[in-house]
Image (cartoon, rainbow over all chains, first blue to last red; front, side, top):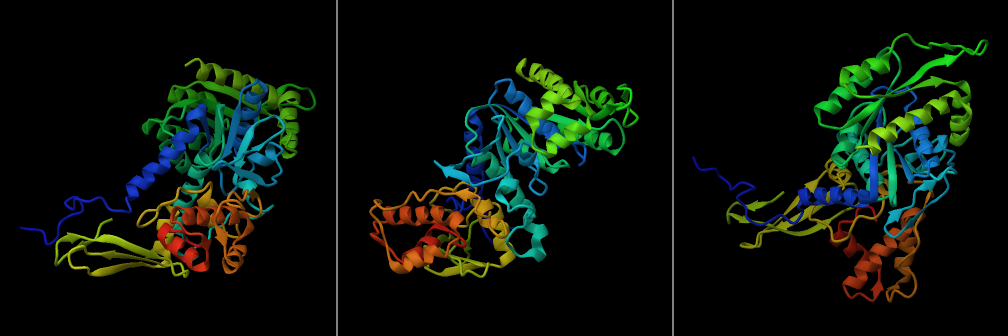
Length: 296
Length: 148
């Protein structure tokens, strides 16, 4: 039976809107911007509260102190804290030559974060019909992430670290926007829901063909303030178990050190790296990360 | 998306787009065979959904500006935390009428440079010596610039 109308494909001329072409141009813009970035690492946790942002910030700073050019993209649009942890307190970002200049912290890490674009303490909210926000706000957030990748003058970097928000959606978005992603670093706690969530994120990543570099176990014990002996904060060996289950390296175990938390709150990443047990472990983790990635 | 004039079995051509300013959008398409014009009207939610994709119905003639979506879409603006140099300043060969300058002054400072540059480039590309509110309206329609 004849169809009443010709189909889209049967109409010969391209439509002037060419929405697929516009989307492809957006992705091309990301690729063009990141062409001068050697390695792109996304830090993922699955669940919030595992210290992912602190670790991502410390990894970026540790790489920078080894004389590498490093960028840090805070992809957590709703709870951005990476800039604060790196001691960047805002101030206008310059727009020049078709791109926004990232902030640069005192270690020399180039940083972009929604935190730098919002008034102090203001939540992120989008203009538009709020009653139907569920229909379009997700797309707006993906657009913002794309713009942070494509419209920031990252320059030639050795490493770009992307601090993903909790969950797995942004991990998929970043991989679709940056198919040349070097890989993921998963952060877990030794036990509990954090390990399960990180495992779920790793399974999804491996199923989607996203390269995984390894796992880092955070809050892996502490030094007893009385005797200095290492003690466990949580039971279990979440990092080791995830590494074995997913056949990936355990890049490091990072002990909890209250001084590190205080230094991160003050935005003193160099101090954290040089003066705390956490910093020592982060530097060892970076050495392992570098050997895993740069040795490829 | 394509529109078909069913009686003529002809693909319709994009004619113009207008943005009334109430969150809705209108895009008109003309049949090249019978000259019939139809308009597609979208409600605020549909308009917003398309806008959030960073695409423009009918296409656009200007490249995206840096962080254009973030700057347009964040409620309350992105504070005064972006500094845009006024690239289209004196010496560009394009004059601004008093009314146009007043209208430009109503644009938030953090996007004003970007907006001024877009209108100036539009004027230069179209051989327009003076930017007036009417030229700004035409540029908005031609270039698909919402909320500018």
